[in-house]
Length: 263
Image 1 (cartoon, rainbow, N blue to C red):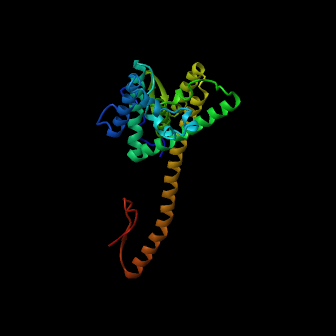
Image 2 (cartoon, rainbow, N blue to C red):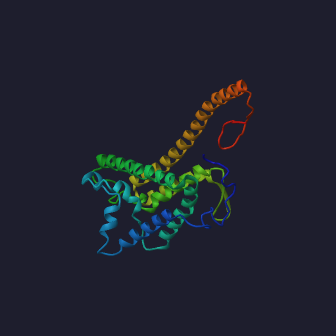
Image 3 (cartoon, rainbow, N blue to C red):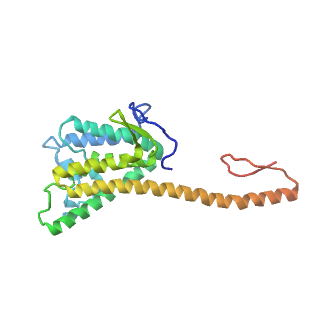
């Protein structure tokens, strides 16, 4: 599944997601991120994204919904950087969704989003056990909202299209497989400034879970094809024997039916 012949080269014009009709569910995800990002700047609505984001209230107050909703709460200051992050989510998301399909796309997020949150929470609890005041007063800031989704989609793209060539910064050709380290590198640089070790652990976990989920999916498909082939062969031989006994002619076809036709 990973690294198929979907695209041998990706140029500066886009990954394929900038042309054609955009998926509605992906657009809905971007609109949700933009809406929750906007709500934080108004006093009367700021509590909504605050309740959605991942916080220590998950284990202190039982706010378990934050294990999933934190990925829907757009985060950042009022700058063009937020729009750039949304653009990256869309850029990678269109190709990943096209390869996985709608169900596969959301199944990936359903695994990676809470999985990354659990790893980040475990890291923060361990930090607080050693240092009661923690390392940072605002843990998980590196993985909130569009940041964790961007990490998941970059890792997914690097896994699915590992042999594609991307023009990084529109100039430098880079194999897509190396992009799996991109989010980790960016997260590490951000960690140096924020000291958000729990958030950085979540970024690493999101990357690892995405690669693992997609690699296992490919392995399951390969195993299933092998098992079907093993079943098909004895059935084909049985049909051949029956046809010979009754004087029928068997025409073998390598089409979607995968079996012989008796004339």
